[in-house]
Image (spheres, rainbow, N blue to C red):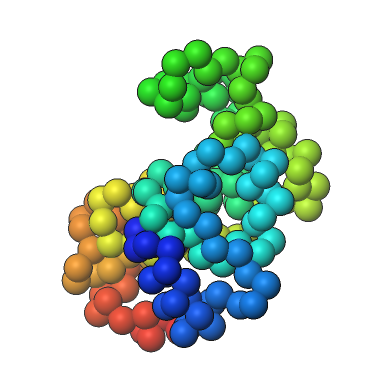
Length: 162
């Protein structure tokens, strides 16, 4: 998940062995317009998300592991504030990410995935917090990102955790 353009993201992901022949690469603006059901359909093959926003990263994490999925109508309505006029529980609850608890659980009888997230900026904090394991950078990471994480990589070297 990166803010880079799709061509750059795909090229780097191929070089690193992340993007495979049958993998899916998507852009954040496309992801944002998808329904929970549409996202669930691509998740098994999703390997790259480019031009993504911090909210895209958070929505992807919550869709994978279920943390932060609204439990009630009131929680859903609170999360939808500021996301557009006219959104209603009755008409949009199954159409807008992140979805809602009942729908999420029905789509995952075995439960969610375990998700790890890395981040260094303040805008990464929601995704770091929603992840099962959040990893922040100790040197370049902001105090907010570090505080939202479970693990702080003191030397900023991924090899330290592998």
